[in-house]
Amino acid sequence: MATEEIELSTGSANQGVRYTVSRNAGASKFAGKEVYTARVVADTAALGEVADAMVAHGCPYAKSYIVAVLTDMANVMGDLLRQGRAVNLGGLVTLRPSIKGTFEGEDGCFSSGTNRLTVSASVGVKLRGVTSGVATIKQGGVTLPALERIVNVVDGSENTLCSEGQFIVVGNRLTWDDEQPDEGFFLVLQGVKTKCTVIVPDAKGKRPVLRTSQAMTPGDEPEVWFYTRINGGLFQVRYEAQLTCVVPPEEP
Image 1 (tube, rainbow, N blue to C red):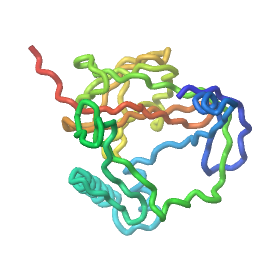
Image 2 (tube, one colour; image 1 turned 90 degrees about the horizontal axis):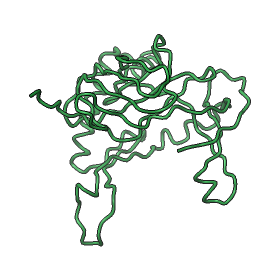
Image 3 (cartoon, rainbow, N blue to C red; image 1 turned 180 degrees about the vertical axis):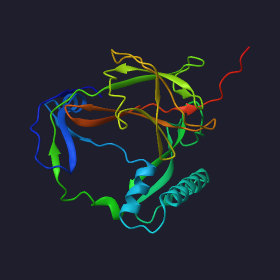
């Protein structure tokens, strides 16, 4: 969503929920007046970081054991969701299958051409008020990078990736310090975040070519996130379209 950013002062707190405020073009048009909304600036804690935090908080199990259990839990949750069941994780979050798209009347049936099965989530009671009363930090307004298209290098198709394959990201302001371990493009699959390697850089930040070292199975649906620092703050942008792992075409 395109926004026009406004400048904000920066708070003095070192920790808390960071945010920017910008003019919301869509809401302003709908309301017939200027509407400004907040966007939380937050990076994503991958599975390994969650395990590290659990160990730091006194969990008696090793990081490798925690990662193995949580990975297996994700696989079991996937099996339950594919059975059409909702999954409640002890009051933390409830996941449930849902169907996107419209139907031609009450007698309409699911069609892969117009409908899509997805997973929706709702926050549970144990997390619903967890941010109440925490510090908030205003940050200066910024123009965020834009991830417009992802193209599979092997066959030129959009929104597909191959296991350990190369891909092109088309967008704007895609510049970062690759020497920083927390900046760049990351592929996230089942909670595991893997940094992508730059194959062909683009100083203009429009079409970098990257490679993922993540092994994937055809049908997997990874996410691609971009992290970069702007005005001293670490910002993240997610590629919004659904990606699918495919089998690379056979060479003639």
